[in-house]
Length: 298
Image: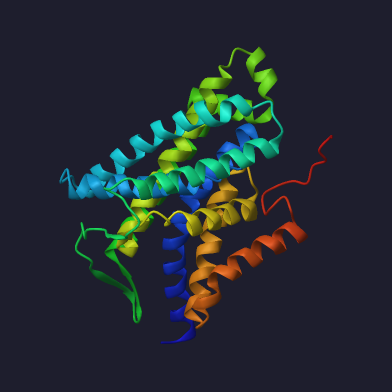
């Protein structure tokens, strides 16, 4: 295999993994853009979505696409409930209080998953819902059907998100609230409804990412949201937290870097590389690739 072929192959693998990170990162970046909160429970929503998809397929016997839709709807409702019960009472509190609440919600979901007998602490094998086939793009360069499905669904959801944000009334409300919540409220925008919708939308994307991730790796477990959630946060920071195109690009870049590090024979340190990128971004360009440095009054 030539160097060019190796590069193309790793780009394909990295974009497949990065598309999952991008879907999770979009939830982080939208919530932060609206209420300036880092929702560290978002990785657990990813995990719950994977389990909902798992039970939709194994218990209800539904096809894969239907399982994704059910997982998205379930987690959208869950996201709104969490926002209403855990985060809404703390909107005027110090940011540290909301941040620690997010960590607490994350721990609650993990421990609740262990306590439930139908989830538990033991990993479960995700069913093979599609026949895995290998398609050759060129000599020594190929892509499998599960990764192709992952990229296709992820790109479709990203396109739909862009349509919602830029072409619908609720999307315009989201952009207005992200710019100035008080002014948006004076203009007649229902801020509470907009924030709830944002949580629902981000949670739905995380659920889809969870099912796609489980499809590719063939396992679901209560801790599966921890590392992907943190790497998605790195992706959001890399692209520019609060900026939707930045989250998409950041997710792709982190996926490509992670796969490239593994292909180079350093798979044991691929997680460390992702967090090293976070440190470097915070040191060199804290606003991210798409962000602008602004002064915040205190």
